[in-house]
Image (cartoon, rainbow, N blue to C red; front, side, top):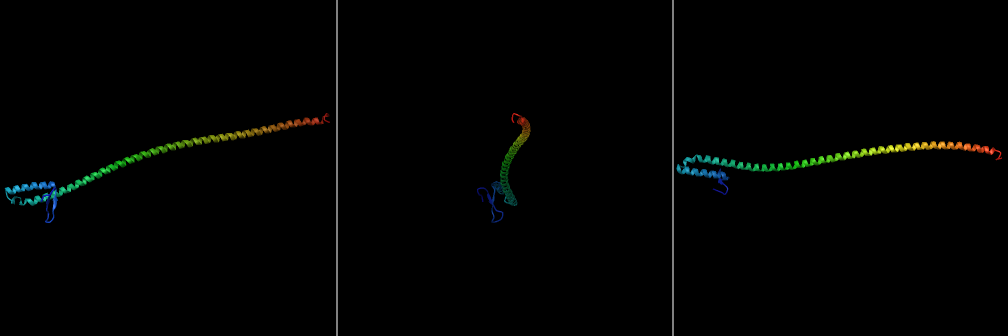
Length: 180
């Protein structure tokens, strides 16, 4: 019995299996050869050979079916492999991009850290300068205070001396006869 894409054969009565086109074509060729031999010599010539050939064709068909399954599985595995390679390449690119961003971030962070340290150093230097100015102003103020104190002391002393001198002559003048 022939179908569109193969030939149906029976292993056991009541079960039928579809034979592949390749094995079906091969079975047809062998069948024609058997018909030629039967026509030329007799049916007994191929009687013993026919079950062996059928078994070989059935095994060939089974192996061919397994081979087709393996080819389908191989194609699926190839597609899976291509998808995995694509995914790997995409993840590799993403990782490379992330590493570049991280390096860029580290560089930026390091530069900001250096800038901040430089700013801190300038501020500390400025603070030390201001402290020195304050100390100098304090020293100058103390010196001025001491100088003013000394000046005041000498002024008061000079005033007292001059006042005493002034009082002395006046006291003499009061005792003078013109004032009496």
